[in-house]
Image 1: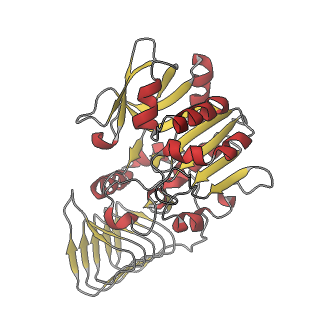
Image 2: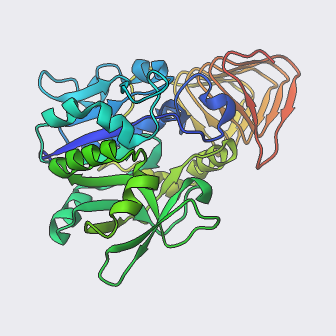
Image 3: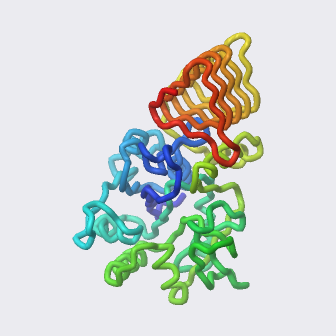
Length: 372
């Protein structure tokens, strides 16, 4: 149990092109996998590892995230001492726009008093938009055994857009020798934006960046310190994914229809927790059909569903056809509608006899609360 480690999760709103999916929410709050939010995976990883305190750094479009996380009780983080802390946006005197940050180090500089008050000796920093079931105990042990200054989690399986990613060159001694930021093509090991270091070093680097106008961990800090500190990789080659576009979100979601992927991501010994909404069981009407799909609770299925991911409280009327789709909570598909390669946000209504078809690599997205 990692009682000596503090967790910090960034929920900043990246410039990734997820279009309508991130208009009402930050990327960490985007629904994923039928009943989860992106941030559920990293919070669960930390809880499963026994990390007692988790700080969630809020920045923009975070109302949805506040509603979802609440007090943290669904992750066993609602405690009198420690537990989950929701950290509001910080504004620095040097920032031209109130509340706007220029990178993760800029954010950390604004919350240095919080860093000083951390009661653990180590800090695990992560992005809230990484879908992974990661053994953080092993990362910590790798950090201690190797004598690393910073241990960075990476993978040999490329998961993201190279133009939005960082890669590492690693030598035979299993040390990082070069940091390659945003190349045209993947090279070396891909950084998963997860790393572990001591609280003392984190505060030192935060102060260093604040006095040297360095704002980004990936683009500014790591290339600058790669020859000054011992950077050690922790290579994780299990299932992990990042969503940098609507098409990657769609493709990554659809991989969950593979039972092997689900077994790897949703393990009984390392459960992924989410907010408990106590939905009733889904009702499948006589004559309905549902093939190769993930369907959450509280749904009413009277039509046909195939190769799709259906969130809570979705209703699909008799005669409606849903194939290769992702339907968020509260979607209502009326009789005779025909959907293929479509993503509907929350509370969407598809009216009777409407036909909507996207493309496999460019799914059609219907904005939250729309009526089509």
